[in-house]
Length: 363
Image (cartoon, rainbow, N blue to C red; front, side):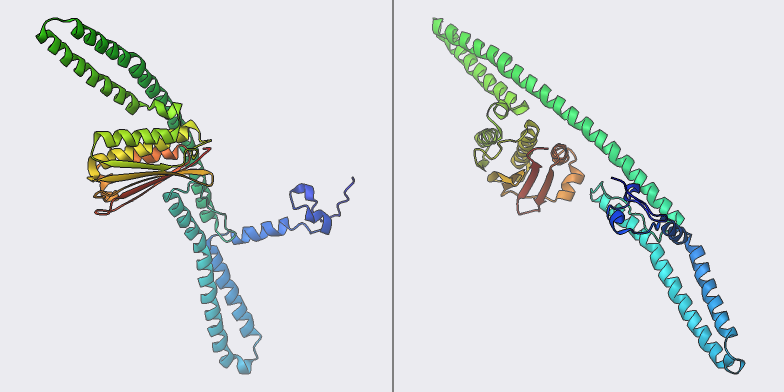
């Protein structure tokens, strides 16, 4: 198909909308470029130019006024010129400060965590402000690039740590625990064959001690990396965590979740939510003086939402982060952030704590 382009008109293939080819919109790029150059001059030049134009207009008005009316009209013309000059100066200053407010708004958004915020070029910004906005955008682009690289490195480190935890847990469970179990069996057999009552009692004590060590090694293995999470999934893992927490302390932990709520979730998502629940319950056990804790797992559209509540003392979040940087809240947020999730902590002295983590099922 042949497209005929008339002289002075812009074809759609040059980057304009396809509609230009159909309706024939004239090419206004030179005019727009001229206007941008005028609007892009410095604020001082704009003010001087506006005042010069007002002064020239006032001078022309005075020169064209008849001599008989020049005295009376002169005062009016000067008053109008002064008012117009003040109005133009005010408008130019307001327009010049608009890009500054845009830069301030972008900085505030970045401070709140919106690293995708950028300064939108303003047609009324002077050259200095335009360069400032471009420089800020370049800095934000570099910051976003560095942040992406750090996130990738942190995610890789986290996966390596989880793999190492899994290996250590498997070694504890399959090697160390089995060796202790074999030792306990040998002690039981030796106690059964012993004829001296004192020796039998001593061997029984050693057998009981070996059993205690065996349970501690198994518990340590599950603490390092719960195999139930790999074998059965997130919901059984949370139920096992609640059961072991209730058995070893006075804290009563309940889990509310549908059996298939975590179907389709990646191992990284399940590990992140499990660690949030583990760290939250650990903090409740150590610091909250709570009687009960409730763990809820639900699906919210394409995200898994984990919520941990307790009826403990609560705390001031700002004070806790200032006094106890190793409390685990920062690590909890970082782990969830690596799977594109968010953690919200609602806590106050005297009214318990609620920790809510929301993570996309497919990060």
